[in-house]
Amino acid sequence: MREGQHVSGGESFWKRVRRGVHFLVALCMALILVMTGEAKPRPDVLFIAIDDMNDWISLLDPEAPIKTPNLERLAARGMLFTRAYCISPACNPSRSALLTGLRPSTSGVYANNSDWRKALPKRRTIMQQFRAAGYSVRGAGKIFHHKAEGFHDEDSFDDFQMMAPQNMPPKKLNQGPEYGSRNTDWGVWPPDERKTIDFRTADYCIKALQSPVKDKPLFLACGIFKPHSPFFAPRRYFVDARKIGLPPRRADDWNDLPRGAQMLMGRTKWFWTGMTKLDRRLPGSFERFVQAYAACCSFADAQLGRVLDALDASPRRDRTIVVLWSDHGFHLGEKDHIEKFALWEKSNHVPFIVVAPGVTGEGVRCVRPVDLSVIYPTLLELCGLPEEKCDGRSAVPLLRDADSEWKHPAVMTYGRGNHAVRSERWRYIRYADGSEELYDHEVDPHEWLNLASRAEYKQVKMSHRSWLPSKEAGEVAGLRR
Ligand SMILES: [Ca+2]
Ligand SMILES: [Ca+2]
Image 1 (cartoon, helix red, strand yellow):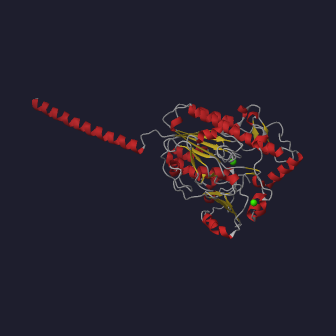
Image 2 (image 1 turned 30 degrees about the vertical axis):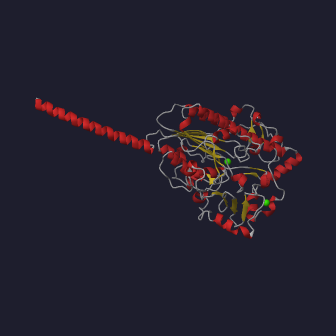
Image 3 (image 1 turned 120 degrees about the horizontal axis):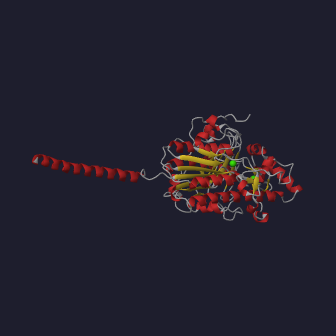
């Protein structure tokens, strides 16, 4: 017995040693997990898309007449990219490229009608990456281009609230029956803002943010449809038209445009010429149109504010990465153009904000040029998801330090063969026929003086041309014939 007791006493000593070793191993594992970040709960993502919002907003220019207090409120928490550009100035190519991480020149998705899923049948969207990583992916409103069946991607969401049809007034409001369609109309509508697409989208997102925090992290996509046409907003968002005014123009601006620009822009010329005719017949029409676009921006900003209020009231607030972008800009008569569909600054320059707790500082501005192809790889990196080959580069180095070296300019494409390259100083445009534009933003922010034909800028043109895609995919078939 004594011997047994002795043995037993010996076992308990070794048991204690083993327990000690197990404890040390567990402690080391925990330390490693904490150091590598794996023990932390994964962040939630609030992914906000705005449709057709340009840069004439106080977020990007405090002097601008369109006030966007909620965009500024969001920017104050993280990083505002002051030189952010769309990948393509049209809904479908912009959104498809952003959401798949592949440019139009890789996918062949150049047009609003292009069947992006046919072009990229197996490519995972950003949302599919998050679903595969165990996120609950929910969304509402306009994330993919919506105008016809087939653009939305069901596999990208666990739950999605589609946009209801646009609530239309009983008749056209702009008093220009001969000009455009009901879809390009503008005015005060509807009387009750709860009956708008965006109010409902914000409601969905507010509910999702209020849902209990469970095991699965949340990826919430909020697709705000305004200021996209028709330019309707409830009355309280309208500011006196004289306070908005008209954007700057130069009467002879088109004199130095090359053939490629004249050809490309000819397709949408009716929008501008129709406005000048309407304004002659019914003076003040142009001002009222611009005023309505401004009201639509304020309305979109207010819906963003409602979603941010819900985020702030939620325990998710400090663990949520917020990314906000507009799919492209919009001309309001600058360069005698109303519409997007151009490779000029006004159609390409967009609001783009990233708030990444623990990564971005507060109220930081980054002046490096980026296009929105950075979003896909940036979100994967920020959330610790596996890397995926993308056309864009992760902007995490810029999120950590806004002054990091960044050699890449922004590249924009509209239709096969037409591209723009934006560096910190210059915009270079090359059309499919080889004709060019070059603007010096240091002295010419409105892009009035095309320098492309001047010999002294040959080097500038060459250095920008080197960023154009070397191969261009053939155009994929359209969804509607
Ligand atoms: Ca759009
Ligand atoms: Ca000009």
